[in-house]
Image 1 (tube, one colour):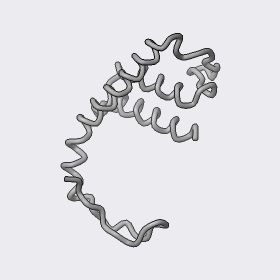
Image 2 (image 1 turned 30 degrees about the vertical axis):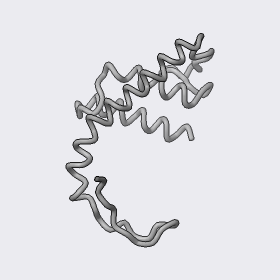
Image 3 (image 1 turned 135 degrees about the vertical axis):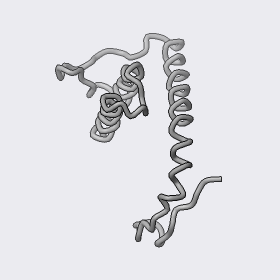
Length: 110
């Protein structure tokens, strides 16, 4: 699903360019690294040249990446969580029939 990953990275870049405050310009290299780790050998730079080679040269390097990914996720969740829960009550619209469940309304998380 390379297209989904490309979409996520492009939304992050657009949010920085538009000054929406979701991500900072300083976070974009880390977001791009997440993308490259996910898509593997399909990762290319801005000139469409494949980025090749191992991403981690040692266990400590891999562990540092994982720790950074966890911190990044927690930070973004903390920033976005407040807005999500603030807007959730007004976003409980009827979604219609879904393939795997009956017609229902969303519910707020406690």
